[in-house]
Image (cartoon, rainbow, N blue to C red):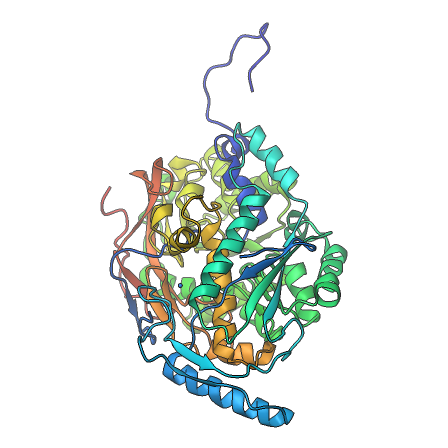
Length: 560
């Protein structure tokens, strides 16, 4: 803020946390607040990746409607020969059960193994001919699969933040719709859809994603879910990106995608309806716990600063107070207890933007008073801005242990944190190594269909959400309903690439099961935005599942 002309300009000082959030990062904050607990920008091309104890093998990638206007979306690859047999068997049984004309036949493609050549997550190719069963479930006809996409009233808030940061949002509502519809055309033209195409129906919701992420808005979320199930009569909702809305959709038996980092228990209780590209937090806390046991233990806090440096490690974990996140903390605590370990402090907080600064100050005071050397951050991306600022104010210099939640492991977010503090940050990430936007599968899929325009910056989130939807549709076979969708997902043979190993199964409703070890380098230029500050892999190309982390000190900060 520029001081009045009559007031002498103050000496330069460190920007406040709120200023750092806004200044130059309007688009990021708008994104982070709407997709607060969503993983972003999955990389899709790059060097070879090795997954320890991975079971999968590499496999192999509109028209729109706005409530009163139309769209097609995507279909993903099939289960290949095994999946083809499953689909054909399900088709025959379903047709016989209905006493109708038997469903068509599905089998391996005669001309290729993969549905999409060059796509490391593509299932094997399926060929199909014959009857698809017509209206097999709500939202399904012989020609279409209706998929809702809620549009909320958060755009004005986002633009206000962006303007405060001196920036304009580059992704307009029209950009998002166009990108989604173009990707729909991509999937429809390349994946086996058994004679159907997804029809996207965008609608103006009553709910606010920001309000719902802060714990409110249940009534509006319920109203939007009723509209999806009873008025739009959709099979699925692509934008189920808050817990209240995803829960309401599951109650209405609508398949939905995007619940942010909820627990395994939460997802299992809502099966077969709720899925998410964001790794469930039970997997995260289990992996973090086994990483701590293998890599750190009670050895000296080598990478703490000040008086904490080289003291025997004492641990704290910070996570939101919501019960589904605390279930995940419980899972991690059980693993530690099985090995005779524990956390010394367990702190919770309420995600309320207006009070985050005060909450952070109180948490830092307690952490410092308790001589905590190592802080596990199972948080949203905004809280560490305040935590690191308050830690600097209170001369508290712990090891910041990144758990890989909610953008905290993204370069463009790490750049927001106090760099003196974040130079002590290391941990794990379920994302892959970042690539420039134009190297991603989502970007290239978009350009395949619409080479003359640029996609929205959120193209990869949209792409991967649609990929999950499409996987289940194809792997279900022609007799599509929520139950066959789940069975189809469980039959997915898996895929391995720069984003790690993808797979689904009982209790596994999010795709990524492995993580990489990372640390922060304040001087390294990020490929995301060309600015200083980036995460570095301690073992390039290596990823580990929970319980598979190697013993011994992590090779972090070795290049600094």
